[in-house]
Image 1: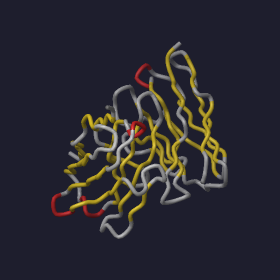
Image 2 (image 1 turned 90 degrees about the horizontal axis):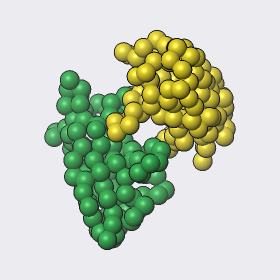
Image 3 (image 1 turned 90 degrees about the vertical axis):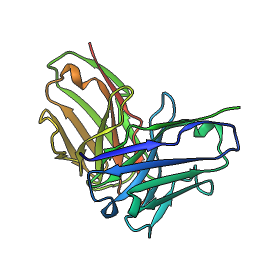
Image 4 (image 1 turned 45 degrees about the vertical axis):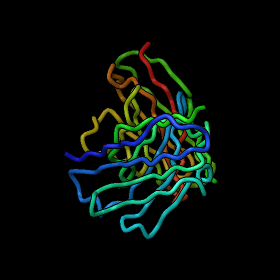
Length: 116
Length: 108
């Protein structure tokens, strides 16, 4: 079964850091670009970051540029999002999603809450 | 940056009704548009890619059309399980993906 499972969310104070992970299974992870997409409470979807299959190309939304770092370990079939200098407006459910003619496989999401 | 708008923002329809949602891009995006369904508390699900192609396993009552700046998503016969929020997404302006604001569909 093709599957993505996120982990690492939690409650963090403003200015703090958190590292999200996304474990992939059921497909050749190293063949696909991957994305992080977030959804603030009661709001729509916001693309956060993308990484190409070999990590050659990495992109960020302006809202997180300079604070978030996406990475992947193809040997471990895992995607990561290092989030630093967190702000209240980063509070959201964070999804990882496979890039294939659209984002065709999504994880269940992990919740990040930034609050003092 | 490309902006995406959707209308209506919400709608109520009866089971069996034909439902149409429109999505407009602020500039020509060719057919680089996808449609997603998101049920409450769940992750989004890809329904339509490249404006009009049905993702594998998606019921044929869902369809998409359009190119350039104007796109349409249609549910030919609304079913109770279609209650969800629907989002369009452009990917013409890679590497930036932009989602529309969403259209919430419920049963009248």
